Amino acid sequence: MSEEQFDLLEGLAAHPSGSAEVQASDDAPAGPVRLTRIDPACNMQRFYSLELVTSLFGEHGVVRHWGRIGTAGRSRTDWYEEPGEAESAFQTLLQLKRKRGYAS
Image 1: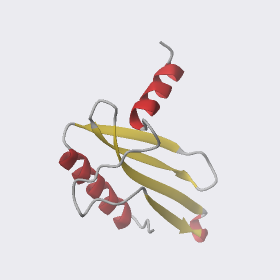
Image 2: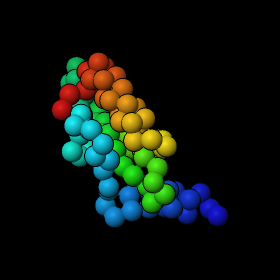
Image 3: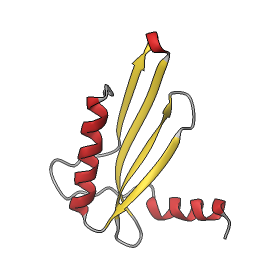
């Protein structure tokens, strides 16, 4: 199986029909969180988004998407067995990015 086919299958598993969000607690966001960090003095224009998803196999994940505003950027999905683990990772990543200067 080629790497391109594997990436497609991983994407389909992460988003079976759009994106199914994990709704396990009141702290969980209702949808993807989109953050930006812009500093004209440094020519910095970045975006970062986080989203909780569920795979076809019942795994819970955190999808991260980042890059320079205006580009396709990069993405990464981390999978967890329990929804609480995914939510904890989501909140930790969100706090770290806000500490670095990203804002909604």
